[in-house]
Image 1 (cartoon, helix red, strand yellow):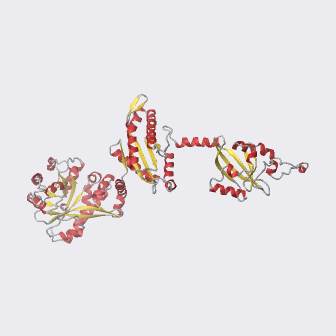
Image 2 (cartoon, rainbow, N blue to C red; image 1 turned 180 degrees about the vertical axis):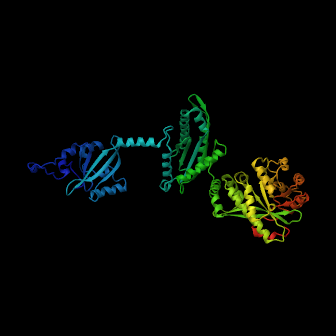
Image 3 (cartoon, one colour; image 1 turned 90 degrees about the vertical axis):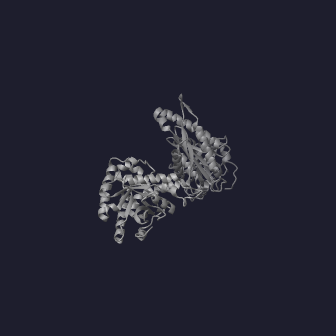
Length: 606
């Protein structure tokens, strides 16, 4: 068949060979096949297409569907009529059906009617019946009503019923699409994405006191203001930021093709300003504010989960910093938070794995410069973060209670080490070991029993163990803490108040507490830092020396010894010795060192 046609071929010739009837008389009948009239009268839009893809005949239903006359369709390319060449996969499948290599093609197409409206059609292409088929049958079903129903259902599924904004599902769908490489590569866009994640401050109180109906009205009013902010921000751009309600009183504004943090900052400021204006709802005048977490970054390498985690973290910072504000995501702050969480999660297993070690800092007699004791200081040999000082993890241990097993390990290790030094140097006066004790150890464990057991197991004399508690933990103690301290003192263990002078400084308690030692906070000693008293540029402060001397004299009158922390210079040591301080601790004598270095200091002047 040539590529042109003078007119429509009779339906009898389109359908194929006549079907043999069962009646013998009918078997001699010639003419149109018995179903040719059905082809013409069928409400289903159909056309016969030859192997070259040309329409050889079409029924009136197809002509009506396409808004043309049946005779005008003959000779047309079927693929053009129903847009089969618009994508490679469909075009290939269509050609395979024409060649007899594929049994059927079914696809959905959006067709344009000459009167201007569009319709959705389900297109089916299948070989014509017969032993030697000469073409294929093209059939089209108008599924516009079905698609419209699907679209309505999808809209309901993807939008929040209260605010009519896109909901969480649609938001993540859009976010995922925006982060796909095809969305920003070779498209002339910035390749960046921004997000304002906000939470309404005080909404729960309004919802609880005025009811959910008022709460829903307020959410709808908030949604309107956010939409206005997004439209203003998107003026002159291809599309404004997407505004979505993620649930409860949480909303998000997604900025695709972001130009940088300044754009996000301006959007966040406009949102805060819009929400600060009072709302008039049902005769009530309501006020509220919002906290906003702002994240802006390259889309490449970012995932929806990572972006939302950063936004959620930043929103938490905004609320913690005082609410009614926006906060920009800070990678360093987040890294510190993630490190803190990672440390908290691995603290207890680290104790079991033996990742902790003790170093010891000398406590030196101010009178003769000889070693009198050491303070045990814990270090965490973390497999990922390296050696960590106690200020990185002790607070975490106190929060989750792991300070109790960790404290037991410190106590046992320090006492065992002190006993080893004593055994290795029998000719030297034994030195005491000072161990820090957290308040939670006093409340959450039987500290007295733990100390008694360790002393018994190691053979260390009780007077060679000193337990340090902070001033804030000791001052005002009553009940169990005071009973514990008294029991330990009765056992012969020395009790020291650490960082004295920074907390309550309630000196009246000193006469009633079983305390042996005051450790002056380093802030007092730093006032002695100048190397010479005749320094004209930075003269010493006489008041510091007067205060420290008064505290030392009071402690001596109460039968207590005094240790000065943070001694770093000879001048400081000289002045502390002159006013009667008993022992010193600081870098002048030694930094915290491993146990073998302490052995080298025994019997020598430090």
